[in-house]
Each structure stands twice: as structure tokens, then as C-alpha cells.
Length: 579
Image (cartoon, rainbow, N blue to C red; front, top):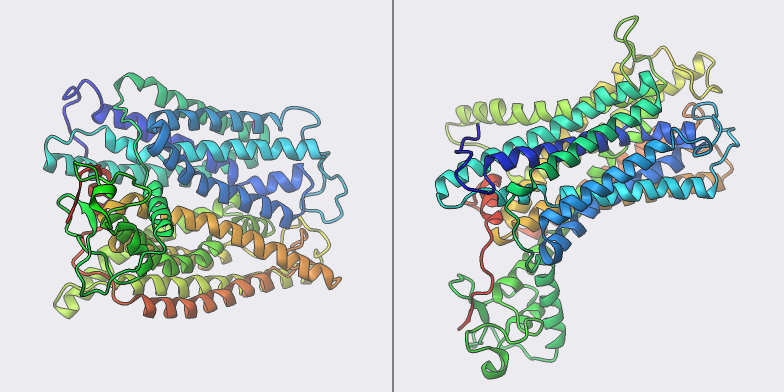
């Protein structure tokens, strides 16, 4: 539990954290509440086919995961974190209000069609689609403003006078931050989805608007008590300087490793000589003429021509992990198939009792439950039991966890393909294959083994990748490590959209019913899932090659919390010196 005197400082402290956590939790509750059932809204109210709707949502997801990177860069370099979060709140609220108005204003959507009907001819007009895309764009920009800075802005509120006390409070803040964020996603996939199914789109989209209003008020009400650090140079600027300096000094001949060379490095840094890998980048930190390259205080006279050894090594570390980072994209592609999974669940018997039916959009919550269960089981049962059996501390290596997660992801798609084949055959046998919105007698509970395996793969691969980034990158790059997974999710959404587009186009050219047809009974979603499973197996082989090329992971590193904690306490990067 977080404990600190409320009035220990005129600004910041625990009282500010409550408003920041509430702002982030309510924003996620609102945004995920809208996106979970969005494929139904696009197919029912805009007359889209399932593949087109899914591609739009893939792009929306890609933007939502990439915008925090842009937001973090702008906040760190130009505007600061407080203005960025405030801008994000206003943009998100405006986007949600405008999207809600599409459920109210006549003519904002097309006349109703049969649900998922492949014969629907009521296409949305260009102005209707542009307005819809504008709403999605505003919400993506807003999410980028809020999610890029909330965690770091919360850390800014804590006093650093007592390092041990600060470390404990910061760790508690991280824990509560992730707990509330995860709880928000779970509630949105259950309660808000149920409201949309039971009360319609007007009420179902109105609830997220109210939640976003509360989120915005929660943030701005505490404005007088926030600590508001000024913007400074971003890590992206540092990487750009290394690349530019290396290019500008490309004609410099590097000496052999045994020759004494003059390198620029930070004062007090343990890195005084660059490594031999990717030697071309070493040119960025070579001092050829100290009188011209350095100022009297030891700093570089032109930081775009002379960088420190630390900056060069940080960029090298990032380049080194990119191949293993890329293997996580296909796992994320499988995770972001929620639109098709929702269509699949909507055609199955979802009744728990004769009067209660689980909303189709709520089934994804089973993946979150599985993820939580596997993390707890691994940490609290499997690891202690294995350590007791072996008589020494035992844990899976990071690369082992990542590889197991990749295999688990491929296996989950194979299981889903088998389930879909049985569901499709059941629909044909029951004579409802021509009715796209008909419900078979097959229970939707058959989808649980898939969600069980998908949660397992995320517990291994997702958690393993995040820990790998924090462990393998220098502590000064903890902000980079925290953004790499989001960049992977954004790239995965683009890859998923590319796969769907090519699958639909290839089959259409063959004059056959598309695998991802709007009539799920006529299509072959099982073939599509088998394709993803096969790509997963190929991805595992690619991962083995990347893992072998990478070499052993670093040993003796601190855990995730330690790296994040130290990375958020900003150091003065201007104290440079030269040897």
C-alpha cells in the first residue's frame, strides 16, 4: 500500500497520483469499451463486410499503439508531459463525443442491413466514412497523448529526497497503475459490452463518453498540485545524432582496436571505449581535433557531429535486439484477431442459463483471465516447486520463455482452426449456412481452450519480451524499453491488416468465396487460422536463428521494477568529458 504524508510537499506526492491513475484507468475503460464491439457497429451500421471492418480496426489499433511513441517524443522534447496529457484528454473526449453522435444524427450511418449480410448493398458514403475515420483519428491521437506520459508523469510527482522511501513508493505506484489499467480493460470487455448489447449503441457509446468526461475532469482538477517538469532532449534525438554524426564523419578511418584513439564520453561513465560491433557507428564518438570538437567545459561543440560513447553503445544495443523484437510481432498478430473472434462467438450458443447470455465481445476477457492465471501460476507455484525439486533457485531463461510463447501462440491458432471447422460443419448440418447471423447449437464455451492457450502464450512471450528489453538494454534506455512492446503491437496490427487484405484479394481473384467472408458460414476462417498457425511455426524457426545469433543474455541484472525505477529518475546528460 502507498503511504506518504499528504502534505510533505506543496506539490506532487500521493494525492497527485490518485488523479493520474484515475485519469488513465477511466480513459482505458472508455476507449476499450468502444473498440471491443466496434466490428459489430461497422458491419451493422455502416454496411461493411467483415474483412474491410477488420482492416479498419487493425489500422486504428496500429495508430493507437504508435501514437504514444510520438506523444512521448513531443512531450520529452518540446511541450512537457502535463500539456501532452491534457491535450490527449481533450482529443479523446472530442473523438468519443463525435462517434457517439453517429448513433444519434440521422444519416450519419447507412440504413440497417441484415447483420453481417454478404448481400447488403447499402454502402456508406464518402462523407460518412471520412467522419468515422476522423473520430478514430482523434481517439488515437488522444490515447497517444495520455498513455505516452501517464506513467512517467506519475513518477515525477514523487519526492526523491529519501531514495529508499522513494523506491518503495514508486514500485507501489507501478503496481497500482498496471492493476487499475488491467481492471479497466476487463470491465470494459464485460460491463460496457453488455450495456451495448442490451441497450443499444446510443446508450452503449454514451457510457464511454461519460467515463471520458470523468477522466478529463480527474486530470484537470488536480492541476494546481502537479509537479510539471520542463521538456528536455529525447532519446530519439540522441539516436538521430549518432546516425548523423557517423554519416558526416564517414570518411574518417578508424584505428585498429590496439591503437589508442580519443573518444568522447560522459563524465563518470564506465564506458570510455566503444565496442567493436557495428564499428561504423564508432566514428560518431571519435575526437579528431579536441580544440575544434570540444568546448572548454568538455562538452561537444556540435552534438550532431560528436556524440558520447554511451550514446553510440545505446544505439548498438537497440540494433542488436531488433531481430528478437521482430519475432514478437506475429504473436501479437494472433492476439489482435478479436474482430473475427467476435464474429465467430456471435454465431455460437452463448447462454449460461436460459435467461443469461454472455455478450460475444466479452469472450476476450477470458484471455485476460488466462494471462493473469498463468502469470500467477508460474510465479507462485511452478517456480517455487521447481526450485524445491532441484534444491536451487530455478527459472526459465528469457529466451526460453519467449520461444515457448511463440510455440504456444502457433498452437492456439491451430486449436482455433479446429474449433472453427467444427462450428462451420455444424452450421451446414443444421441448414443455416446461408443465414450469416444464425446461431448454431454449438456452445461458445468450446472457444475457451483457445483463449486458455492464447493467455499462456502472452504470459510467456509478452512478459518475456518486456523483461528481455529491460534486461538487455542499458538502464539509461528504460524509456526505450517501455515503448518497444507498443511499437511491436502497432507493427503487428499493420501486418494483420496486410495478411487479411492479401488473403481476401488472392481468393477473390480465384472467383471463390473469401476465406474471411462476411458470411462466416460460407467463408473458411479455419483455413485463415491454419495460415496464421503455419506462420507461427515459421516464426519459431526464425526465432531460433535470431536467438542463436544474439548469443547469451546478460547475467546478474536487476528485475523489471528495478530497471524502470532507475530509468525514470532522470540523469543529467550534459556532464560530458573526454579522455
